[in-house]
Image (cartoon, rainbow, N blue to C red; front, side):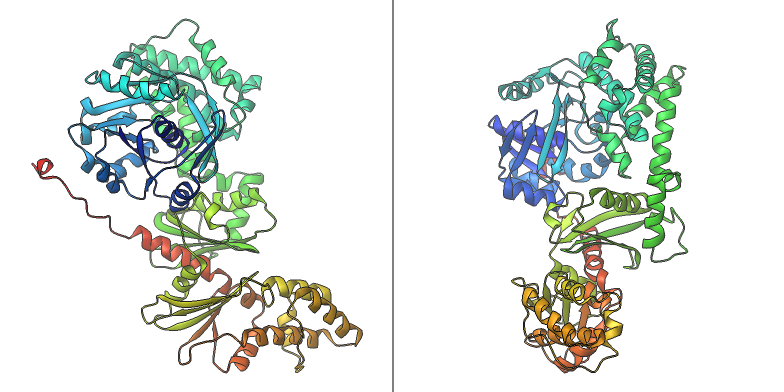
Amino acid sequence: MNIGIIGAGPVGMILAAKLQEAGCNVALCERNEVKRNKIMDEGLVLHGTLNSTTRFAKVYASIAELAELDLDYLVFSIKTYSVADALAEAAHLNSPKLMVVAAQNGIDVEEALVPAFGEPKILRMVVNYAGNLTAPNTVKVTFFIPPNYIGSINDSHPEKAKELAAVLNKVDLHTEAVDSFDLLRRVWHKTILNSSLSALCGVGRLTMAEAMSDADTTELIEQTIRECVEVAEKEKIVFQDDFVRQCLRYLKKGGDHFPSLAVDLINGRRTEIDHFNAKIVEYGRKHYVRTSLNLSFTNMVKAMSNRNIVYRVPGSSGDVVKRIMDKGLADPKAMPGQYKKKNCFLGIDLGSSYSKFCVIDEQGTALFRYFLPTMSNDKQAFKNVMQAINSNFNVQKSCATGYGRKHFIDSDIARTEINCAAAGVSFSLKGEKNIIDIGGEDIKVIRCDKDDTVQNFYMNDKCASGTGAFLSEIAERAGINIGEMSSMAALSTYSKELNSFCTVFAKTEIMNWIFEGMSREDISRGIYISICNRMGKVRLDPGVPTVLIGGVIAHHPYLKELLSEKLKRDMVIAAHPQFTVSYGAAILAMAEYNKPLPEIAVPEAQKN
């Protein structure tokens, strides 16, 4: 059985692992390059309620690539608002035997698939498991309250629903095949559960366990459920007498985690509220039933998503986001929400010392720059910056680079620092060039050809001498303020250098200099000269421009004068050199976004 799964979120990843375990030939389609590479290299890992590690031979970047499998089933496990874009490619996969499965939450989500595939081909799955990503290829399965349900939406192919349910039951992912009427009831049941809790958790920043342990929020949840039930009954969907009590019992088993909609709202991403509470409101209006609580949750979620309320909320979250925006905006006169309707692109340089963020527009103009210390491992600070970016910019594509690029699950693609540095410099300086990037723990020398392609590069990744870490430690031992070091060195004419490039021995030499009564200005220049002599062994092609980038040159500009003298060539410092690599990552994200879709071969039979 050949099965293609579009979307590698927790629902899709769990389903893919179980179907592969059952002996199916499963192919995953995931546009996020970071996640895709981790799954291919290390497998898909489930832990928690379900535990397994599954390898996949086929993990594709585009839906079009699924055509080579001659699929029996095509599963949609992406966000409901992404379906329309996916159908542009997925419709070409249609064949006489193909069945399409909507493994998504919400009311009427399957209707988006009907125009492309027709009602008889569509199965709907009600999923009763959940999980959170703990790494790009890892899902913590937080709960599975069996069974799942699956059915043909118009009862055209009940045998296909039974076939897929049997496969999942073989591997203990208990699933029942039901008819279309029971399926509709199960869909409403699950949506009522989601609507009662998800928006509340997002607005209130509460986990499911926290919401269910508080008497006030539990009362809100219960009243929301009763409101939903009244609407369902008008749609001739009848539940048992103790339905509300059963829902509350189910929700108490949810665990101490955030529902998917709440996670999206908290992180400033688009939500699926239109198929949850908003659908209850829509059907309520159809039958003249008041749905005050569902309307309140719908409008609050939409307001926080679309109007960027989080930016203006008084208190810690809103204040933090505002401070980040005030500090990071390239144009200090820019207003909140100014860039929400403009296509933007994000580059993130996860370096050894600092993580740098850069947002650009379609013209390559930098709109936002920000950095955080990497070694502090402050995950909340990182989330705050991402929340500020997602709340204020219409980010279409993102690219991660640096040491941590393979572990950052929220970026769409990942590229090396070498390629990002070249892209960042080449956007404004075309043609042949040398690029010197002095970073926190390495030095890179990059040679670009006339087409701006990386031709060669050198990297000292064996020793940190001459890097930002070396400078910081030596300056600390000498009692020199790192922010004043460059200006102090410029006042000196001293020409002595450190004999050792090893940080440990260099610290000892610095102590001898101090005991000899050497001024801090002379010590600063002596440290710089040591770095320049170290770099004097680097080969730079003559006759082409040399550009200096990186955090070290940003904070130690006097190094440029000494390097120019040592290497006997003119050099320039890139604008905002600490952000050149993150800027280049944003440029590559924009290039990926503008890349044309691959040509899809359409069988002759389908052209008619």
